[in-house]
Image (tube, rainbow, N blue to C red; front, side, top):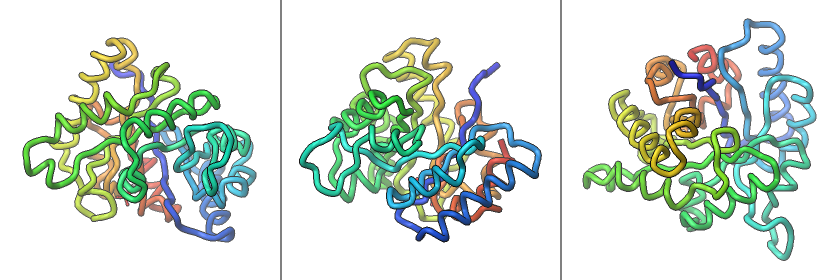
Length: 252
Ligand code: PEP
């Protein structure tokens, strides 16, 4: 029997101004106060511009706050970047690293992602390490090898089941409305866990959470979250509406 508590994480991406972020965060906190608690941990990752505001708004509730990216260095001449320790200072408990949009838009390699994840751990946060294949790689039959290799290259030193979460996000499913079938998701999640066994041992691998991300919505969440190696979701579009985010959480 699994002892892994599921995590439902909202990635707001570059969306929202102060009023939007506050309404979304307060809406989820209100749900936590008035509805039966879902059987999962809840996290929102606002854009950096809203992290301080949202962290203050959720303060004291069961809703955790995370960043969407961090720099590998703790300080220095890195204009426009945000240090992991600065996110932690604002109240972040988690930070996403290696999202496919960062890997594509900012040419982030596995080595960069690994360094960022290590900075997150050093700052006392939980790193959510994202991996996933493109459609071309899937069509070429490379899905498992690509995910294994990204995992090997991106996993931080000192990683354990408490400080690291893996997010499997097939690039072709992110923001497209095209979701992995349960069989596709379970196959990759199981392969990721097998790789974690090799890297970290069976005990840690058995306790580490592996999230699915890519067009998870209220109408497909239950099926995906019921899979044996799916330990939660990283949610983009559906995390921007309280009702949808909550419905996904209730599917745990
Ligand atoms: C994401 O941004 O990580 C994501 C999974 O987005 P969406 O749910 O919109 O596909």
